Amino acid sequence: MRILIPGGDGYLGWPTALYLSQRGHEIAVLDNLSRRKWDEELETSSLTPIHSLEERIAAWGKFSGTHMPYFLGDVTDYAFLSSIVADFRPEAIIHFAEQRSAPFSMIDRQHAVATQVNNVIGTLNILFAIKEYRQDCHLVKLGTMGEYGTPNIDIEEGFLEVHHNGRRDVVPFPKQPGSFYHLSKVHDSHNIMFCCRTWGIRATDLNQGVVYGAVTDETVTDETLINRFDYDDVFGTALNRFCVEAAIEHPITVYGKGGQTRGFIDLRDTVRCVELACNNPPKPGEYRVFNQFTEQFSVMELAQVVRRAAATMGWDASVQHIPDPRVEQEEHYYNAKHSKLQDLGLTPHLLSQSTLERILGLAVRYRERVDRWVLMPRVDWRVSRNDRGHHIPARKSERVEASAAQNQSASLHSQFFSR
Ligand code: NAD
Ligand code: USQ
Image (tube, rainbow, N blue to C red; front, side):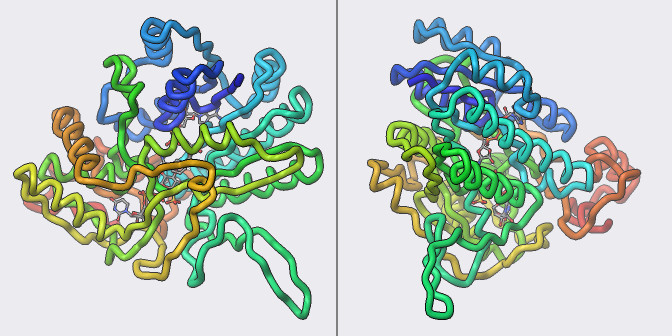
């Protein structure tokens, strides 16, 4: 199958491109490298030393004997995007190319606007390019479990059967997202569903949970193919961050009570789920939703499993409850359905001691690259900076100066929450 992968330089897009290429699909990668620039703005970088996209593609070509074209550009640039769709003629587009951090979208007005413009316009452009140049192309779109929020009822897989005043209908499951980022995914979903209904486009919305892990069989074949692994407060996600924290003997940062429960998925299952979606396309005009996660955990449960795994490696990891910088329920009911991908053939990699040891091992291997300054949360949902404010609250350099001026023994925590 000919597959275009916007966002193919990212944490999920890169291993997906390699995995599908290895299985004989004709892959082209598209990326504007914005994620590498956002890292610079946030004064952080991947734990793993990632190579340039050009070097990665060349290394893959050398290893696999496969030519994988790549296009540097922005999906919000319609002239650029549509020319690629017209020339490459993809049978599927796997769309990863979005700003995907909830904290990034909550920094201030500019970051909220940038997130929603990037994500909503990018997805709209892809929908228009499909309509105009490749009507039969299957859009496989990365959504998020966070679209649903944390309702006090079971979460269905996309749709809810409703009986109201003696009548029945099946409607999209109610959305209660928790950040401007998560909201952008809701807007995307509505646009995609509308285009399927109106133009007969076929689309799969993959409402994915939090991904953990760093490697796939393909990314470990050569050092140049190494995948990105975020651990900072803005782009790092819970389990990955906890492993890095344990490996450098930093307290595991549980926000609030830690009862926040989410769906989680191993990176190796992400690439497999995307393959299953591509291999089993919906009918023209069909908009379908898969809940793409394999297990649910509370943040506190995750902290404890990481702590136990670290103990078997001889480290005494501690857990620290810090005030939750987000506005979210810290204890709540959570039961989300997730059977459709397993029905298509997914055999999940459930979170195991060996997986944890692998992530902890990676963290230890690159521990010299860890910057402790980007571990504690810098973005507070309740504090919205005005347009004259800092780009990113408390830049690292400013915090270093503040720290020098203050009593050196002041805890890190008080710096972050004394604003
Ligand atoms: P990432 O930031 O590592 O990768 C995204 C890639 O898209 C980057 O390489 C970036 O440069 C590129 N990009 C962003 N905007 C672009 C644009 N306008 N034009 C071209 N390229 C652009 O993120 P990721 O973790 O790989 O996530 C990929 C997708 O999966 C996102 O849509 C995200 O919302 C979704 N998702 C991720 C997770 C997770 O835990 N990582 C969980 C659920 C859903
Ligand atoms: N959390 C902590 N400590 C930390 C980091 C996070 O307690 O050090 C908590 C958060 O408060 C939250 C939960 O862990 O309750 C998950 O946070 P996260 O940062 O791991 O994930 P999230 O912000 O939800 O976003 C990530 C990806 C996003 C994707 C989403 C899937 O960045 O792209 O959409 O996971 S989901 O969570 O299902 O919405």
